[in-house]
Length: 430
Image (cartoon, rainbow, N blue to C red):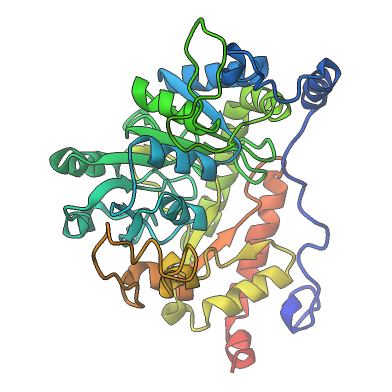
């Protein structure tokens, strides 16, 4: 076998030796905006004045443009999507004894934000194609203690919100959309985050709108929005036209965004649609060039949705290909392609759920008398999620600008090179 055709894992030359272009993309306009904030001396501006409780001019402007884009009444900036989820759950009144149904195939904070307000996560398995919460399994999980549903729009693909909202209305449940990985995604023309009662977005460094850290809550509910603003700022009440007093009528936290983050967010959001179109082009190039490989399924995109193209998540069939998913990923990585298995386990397989200890050592909130039930998270609870985690998920992390089609060609070449040597990998894996 020629040296350039021999797998890098087996001693050959990798397809790619230099790293992919660095993300996020930060232009001169971002640098200028940050310098303006620094020179102003107003880094936070959640000041002692009544108006200051709403944040500085950059925070308020970022909230305004985000609300206008989504055509909602309220946007509330926070310092992370985790904080946003926590505020959202607190704002709708989640508390001890309540259950919130969510997906086990997501980042940790989706579920731990439920625990943060002493409620109990109930895990619903996922759709085999979209990797999002499967609404056909929801109703059997609803009890008298169910307060809300927290679907996640995963990797850029929206969850089936029409079905979820229909069920939520039937049982009078709140719906909080976790949009951290899917800003701008649409279902039948509706933007995610605007379909449920609240939507929560992330601006963490790896996200489609990247400012380093930060998040946004959106809603059309005036009372919920007011509570979110209070919750992000220690629960303080501000009465219009009166001097600020340190009066707290609910427990709140310091979940405030800074002026620097907001200034970056304003500039990054201006380029959002342009970056999204580039992501779409890169995604579809890979879909077109990787489709038809037996045992490898590129991302599914439902016909009624507009994807947000966050992470290129594929499904690998170990039985068809004849090697383990883990060995395949190892071989692709050796060719110089950033590649991984995604979430390594369902959330309920983490110790916090297996051992049911979140606060102290007495089992709270799982043993809380307000809950009054026994709950056990066990292997086999969500078989589709487990199969995806342990055997079939393959994620490509660099399908985003400033990467180019030339970079995508390297990915295709590397994956096809690995598939051309499957028989050798079968021997290697024994």
